[in-house]
Length: 341
View 1 (cartoon, rainbow, N blue to C red):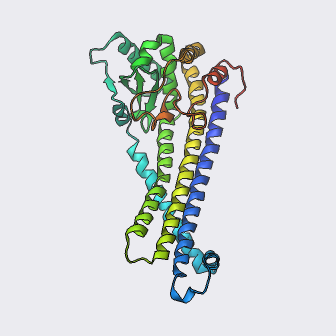
View 2: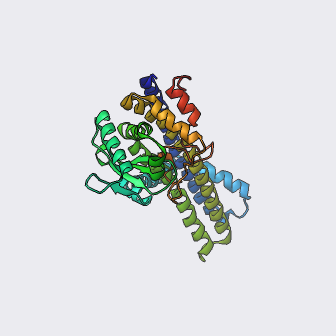
View 3: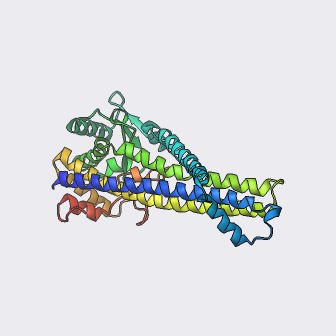
């Protein structure tokens, strides 16, 4: 397997997807800013002196104001800047909220494993493999958590290699032999080496920032619904603005989830390639994938599973929002039967 070629291709595709994320952020900010700015202009035309004009005439005039002169254009740009700052602030908040790998593992009821504890044979083996693969990857040994779930899955988390953790399920330890488990853990080590753990946090934070639009929509809705000082026609206008913003938010989150899944699929290919680089034994990972193909369950029962599906070893989503490529495609790439796409 030409894993370096696979790595280069996955990194290139990741860069393209990041560009699409930034485009999505900019487009959504422009749409929200334009909706608010035009809406506020339109509200001004409900004064008595504009009664002779129809709604369509008022709407056209409200849109024309944006480009009426340099001052109005600057006002619109100020709106745009405020919306961008709000979404960027939400992204930063989401990043710090999800950056602690230990908290993620504990959210799955993970049990911290240490060589100072009394461990089972399976736990000792898993801990030894983590140490071996970290040494092969030339990174600090990640902390290991065992998740009490019979599903077969694993994930890596944390904001950098020094604070990284690896979590594997009880089902994984019971279902795989040492060679297969080495491939699985090497895959998670690959996520750490390739900085996917930080990337996963950034992606989640980006999608989280789009949910700010729902908060803004809700604020406008309650202002329109419960304020007694607002004219009835202006209330209807504000409700329409709230609905438009909610729709933009829904579409933005929807596209964001699709990009999140696409990004995750590329990083899975990259981690598979890295696992082969560390173990120098492709069959271990292939054999583990074959076991999963035998109808083994990969879906964790924990309610946090969907939120962190993109970070898992095996997919738990629908085809459109699938966070992982199919096992057949991953196996073929490892066996070098298909070209990197």
